[in-house]
Length: 143
Image 1 (cartoon, one colour):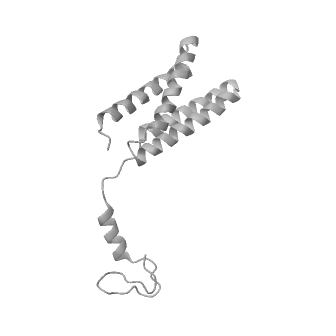
Image 2 (spheres, helix red, strand yellow):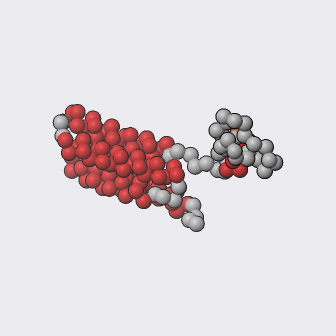
Image 3 (cartoon, one colour):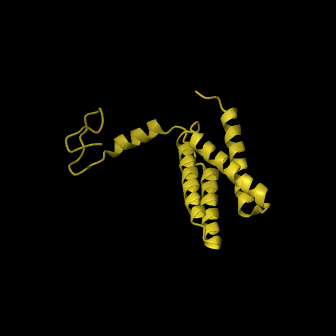
């Protein structure tokens, strides 16, 4: 950042009075720092939204407060895991534990009830997410 007395470039040119940012310096930094960006983990955010909305729908239909609480908890953890994957593709643990736990819990509920909605849907989506995370973790070498 340039202040009123800071140099914009090594060439010795000063910023004009009233200029807070030196656009030449910003342009140089953008060109220098533009490396490969990690895309947002859209599948993970979609999974988090599915988990949160499924539990909210369960609360509306049955009035179950524990369903609402667990939906918010697991939806928030899945969202956090998706965000962490967006920042660093090697950081899979929160997302893996969340989706693995949901796969187990909802899989047992589906097994005992035999109803696909919502337990079977969430268990299936969780199993797919665990498989995707496992494949991506095994497919890329860790540094």
